[in-house]
Length: 514
Ligand code: MSP
Image 1 (cartoon, rainbow, N blue to C red):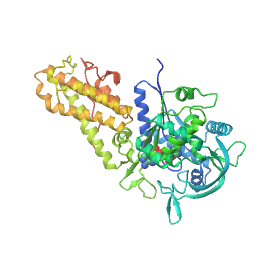
Image 2: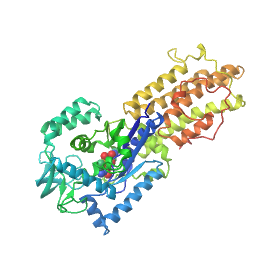
Image 3: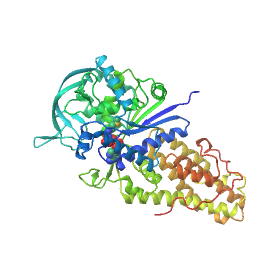
Image 4: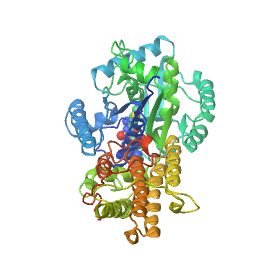
């Protein structure tokens, strides 16, 4: 049987500013999804990168009095360093100023031009430089005769210039139908409804896809006064990284053309580009579409969405001063309900760390390992699962573990990562409670019973660690060492006899209370 493939991407971020914890949230989600699929035996690729063209970047470079290329080189290095510091590994770091990407974008543009999907005309209308987005007057917010972006609030410029257009109108029907037939193409559903109400139902306008008033971008071959619109340029990165339309297109064939699952993780404000323009571009190129556009909400602080003007932008480096990378990633993956905005504060991070990891799971580990070290230095006895092990609602611990794991898989497969991780923490809570009820310290004159309790606990710990390893691989490798097992394999979660004769070892506390 062919190994299944999974290709997941983050947005490629603008290097016009330093990355903050909102970007870290996006990247964490994509990374966790990659880890999950890898544990299921998929062949995976994970892409992140930087979106280096456009007017905004040109302005940022000019403000610093350096060339745009120097500016983006510098920033791209910083991005890579951040992912390294956060222990987020990737397969591609896509840069839109790379020679390869530029060549492929030209191929794409020409293909669209030759197939009459692009035509030359003239654009007159509103443009948000900060969002790199065209808006109509009805989409914009008007205050005192000035127009503003309805979501970001940025002031809009009036643009009048020659432009090439992508014929979106021609694809409106096709897109309606595509969405209808692929009801899981864009998740969550509220994003779909929002896009339907604000864009599709009003009828799509053709999209201006070149600019002529500045030159920091990929020039149209044969008409170099035009640079290609930064979004057409940027979206193409998802296939240019794979080598589309070049002689080195092996990854494109494996992970795109014949690939099984393709997921783009994006913040909700850019879902329109990914859910409307991108599939139309792909359709016009006769290429397959991604499986899922996974749109997520924003990380906000009590002051609201993070922005320079509010002064509430949080740098990941502030958090790294106190917290290990895995703890930060655990917070983002487990505490923000999929699709909703989530409030972040330093105190919340600290509280979740103490509650879930130090007091709950950490405590469970320490109680179980202390007992086994004291009474089973030479290994646990055989496991005699018995009626007495029944715990709540007449369920045995084994049954509770099995059901927890099933729920975890269900949640993950619906992209509800936060809910899935909560299942693991809930199981830890149940096991701590089981310890209270069984009072194993009172069983020291019945070692078989004590050993049974410990088998249950270690089976539970194994399950929890297997479930948490998608986000905390380093910490869970230590749990694996404690349990003296070769791997944390999903398939072994329900093998309840795996700890027979095992000499569990005790490590110093994995999660020190803060
Ligand atoms: N360059 C485009 C993306 C092109 S993808 C082909 C872009 N870049 S960006 O630097 O502005 O990054 C936006 C993305 O960063 C959002 O879509 C989201 O994934 C993430 N976030 C930025 N701020 C965020 C929050 N406050 N909260 C959560 N995610 C946020 O748009």
